[in-house]
Length: 180
Ligand code: AR6
Image (cartoon, rainbow, N blue to C red; front, side, top):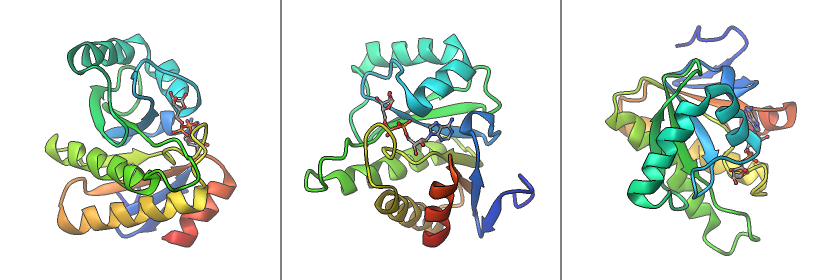
């Protein structure tokens, strides 16, 4: 896993990579979805564009079965045409100033996504900065929670063996690097 990408930085079982998550070939990539699971902008739009209609069809079936995905929860679909085999769709909180339980809900996104990965025997999972785009969560606060939750989970679990943080731009990469 340490050689996964020559340009990724390694911090034990955590890798930091700057780029487009739709090109990442971990077992699963995580989508920053919304509760409808029916697609949107940002990384959600990019994943559905790159992964093709099969992912959206699975999302529709999950929505029909359970009515969508509440904030902080996660669901699993296959990866369609993506290099990743699976997509874990999680719904981050909308930033509302920080007093509406945002930190706990964001932590739940990481925990529940990792639990889903472990339950499905997935070896490697890549996360975007959930909630840090359209949902407005401050990037440094979000990275602190992401790193804390992933480190805690990895300490207690053998799977996933490797977690990749995907920073979309240089600023995001720098913020993760500080936390790691
Ligand atoms: N690869 C990696 N990271 C990306 C990519 C990409 N291709 N594209 C964007 N990012 P956002 P949210 C980063 O807005 O804030 C959608 O409409 C981006 O720079 O995608 O959780 C959903 O349907 C940012 O750091 O997700 C929801 O309605 C991070 O991914 C809503 O947006 C997350 O930004 C969710 O908002």
